[in-house]
Image 1 (tube, one colour):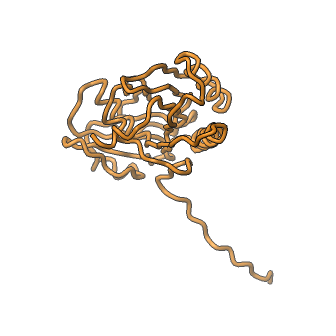
Image 2 (cartoon, helix red, strand yellow):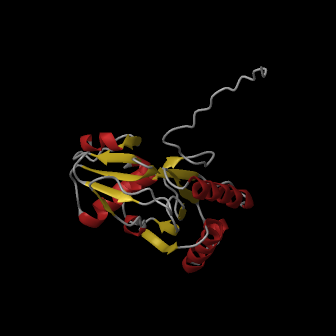
Image 3 (tube, rainbow, N blue to C red):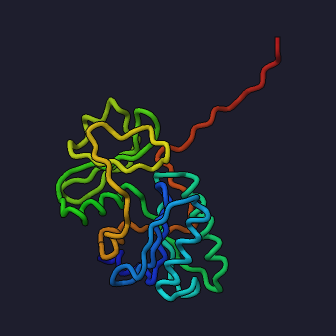
Length: 222
């Protein structure tokens, strides 16, 4: 798998897309260290990174690259993560490569690793009331494009559905879906997970739907 071979190790992986923090140092043979923490994103992220680096007996200067979840998910958490990575990279004498991946695709990999499933299923996450971010996978292993799915369109999606909560105050799971925990630990030796990583020159939050702005034209009061 050529794309996997391009990933530098050790790789610092951080994910702030869901409530809590997931962080780890990934080596060529799996996790060297991994932790999941709860708490306020900023403090928990730095605590988690400090812990996994100490456990791996490495410093930031020893890391060969960074990987982070670009979304969908908590926009604030993802942006805090992106800013932190830029800061850590700026502290290095040599700029390290940065890679991004998408939470729903990672969740599909996680489900496959945990259950051995190879069939068609879908994963949803919070967007707003009566609408969700959705991504499905086929028997071939291909992913659909992540999109916003209205409640009226859910029935056209695979019958086997899963839901990951990405907001503390979630509007609710997608109809017919099973709530699952979002955990990267099973993906330490997952080649499909590494194939999700895409080079990111400027880490930022991935938005399924970009915000639309209307031009305001001032009018004279009459």
